[in-house]
Length: 146
Image (cartoon, rainbow, N blue to C red; front, side, top):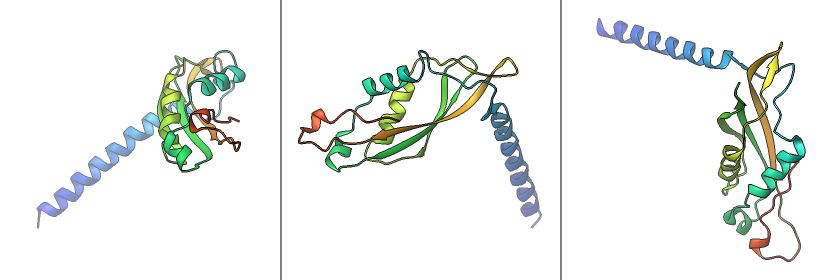
């Protein structure tokens, strides 16, 4: 019976260490900053990059899947992208395709707070919409972005 309190204490200690590590990782990342990160060349360049590189997954075309994938990532102090995750997906390969394209992006201009470069969370929507005209599936690979 003496081992149960010792195991419980050990579990609680490990659990609290894990919470502290997560808090440290999260605490140096900002959601609100003086100057938000920006894609090199601006918003139009970002949209063109995504349109050029994003391919509508064949499974989504065959299943007539449309919708918006919301992807979240951190723009690091050096402009690189990390911690990519899907906030809201639509499946059928669209989520994975969005992640693939975000990983291809060049470095961004980092966000700043009080003149200092900071890590910033961004959430970006990518809309997948099939053209309704009579086209072959290979012609339907350009999603509409907002």
